[in-house]
Length: 224
Image 1 (tube, rainbow, N blue to C red):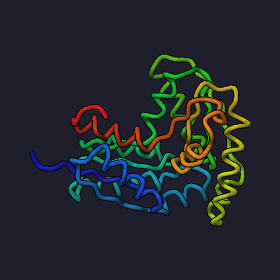
Image 2: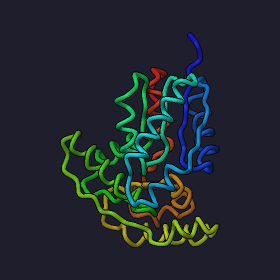
Image 3: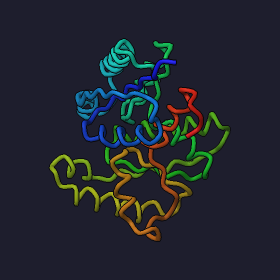
Image 4: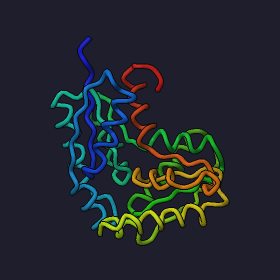
């Protein structure tokens, strides 16, 4: 059987090492390649919403990756998740959004679900995904949204210390009454990892590892 190929579509180049490492761990028998288009997220942030132009462009990028030999595509940006849902309808190969397994896991772990983000354009689609997962599972949930004001601007300015402080403060102070916490952005996972366990008020879920493991199952390679 020919070696499977997976395309990872990113909106930031900083994610490629993380996903390369995860694929080496969970998909060692799969050949991977990356495609990065930062304008997808930059245009979404500027518009304050996911525009039809961005949806069409993502669908074109997915098609290009499949024409390049990919047997499946994993889109790693939560802000454009709704565009992935559209692109999935256009192709026979699996086209997956990285945050779907995280949302399904969250609704199984509790009723009050905290969603933490540094961008409103990521917060809103992630919250919508959690609600959709709850509806699909037949569960009633309450989504508690938390936007870490100023954190994204800090990291753009190269001030990761301020970003990390704002995220950790929001996590420890504003997520105390939830059953599980969902990180809308993969970049926040390292902040949680640096906190002492007693400071984290609830189980925390992030998308990268569960997203890659999802592709393992879709490729028929067994559960991750």
